[in-house]
Length: 446
Image (cartoon, rainbow, N blue to C red; front, side, top):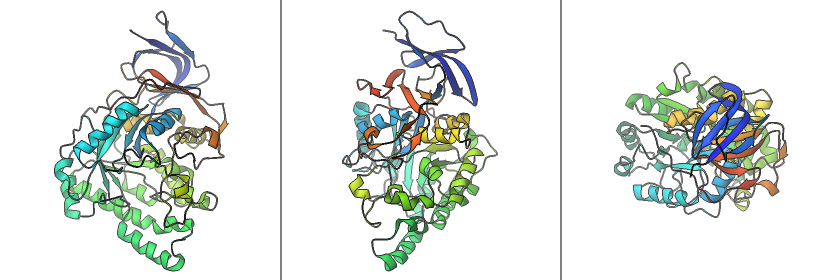
């Protein structure tokens, strides 16, 4: 049976424009966009007067911890938090237990998501020093890309054999997404601080241990290799101002062979926050200086950095509440990322049009995701309604992550996400979830 939903009088944000209008959804698809639409009979109508309507955030880097690490999180809990936060699509990383380093193990994750994910989903295949044959079987139309750890790996996922690395770069046309930190530099810095403090290194030294030098050395090496081999390279979570000089903004995104991502935490926090937040903001790569934070904003705004993401990586609070050497890096972000960026919109740091470009349009373009990331007729209705004048404060009572904490706890945001549509289905409605319907596996126009 055909179902219609009409979103009326919204401030529609799409392709660098804001205009007041209506959006008609027929089943899963955006049927019509106009200044005024007369709906068919039995249409569900939502009056969005005064509210923004944006395409759902496509988060190109999350760790939802399933399989094998479900004491921290799982696909059901974290995708639910994501849709409450305006993220309608996620791409998840391979460093689960077991790691997604064979095609069978990768498909096992897709099966879990088909049953449990409230958002749309894809997964990355994990490259290692010895799985090139498996890696080359990855279907570019059905899988988001390849993930390589060139630093900070878990298990055996550190790809540190330069001959193998060059072979991977030379052998695949798929997007290769990389974590760039130089392990030798980090080990040397860690030994120095361990000699002074033992395991209980003050967390303020984290950005000195996982230093600008460690990041730049690894990023520049990966970029040089991509240029040599013609590989399609995407650098995750750029964290230093120095690295931003490695990227260009003189050609359209669609023509770039080397692209970059920045994460919410590197734009929001700086090393001055370690005294208050401690291990809660211990990430890899590290949150660095205020100069770095401002440099990242500058590169995001001038298009050297192409996309925004979360690197959502939850741990239990008991794990974080530990001495430096034992506290894991990473934190939960999917529920609060969009409202955090909207706070920067209110402060005048970024326009809402630019925010939508970096959160929705550009990830869709970069990964060549079919029919998502825009408010366009014929596209899937992945849509988010935002009340820009309804404030709320992050507290334990409203945190949806399985881990139960957030680095934003106590922060008051000025905007509230009121409705989230995934494939035309109203999945989140002012605090109420539709748990009957699941998201879809992404397909790619490659």
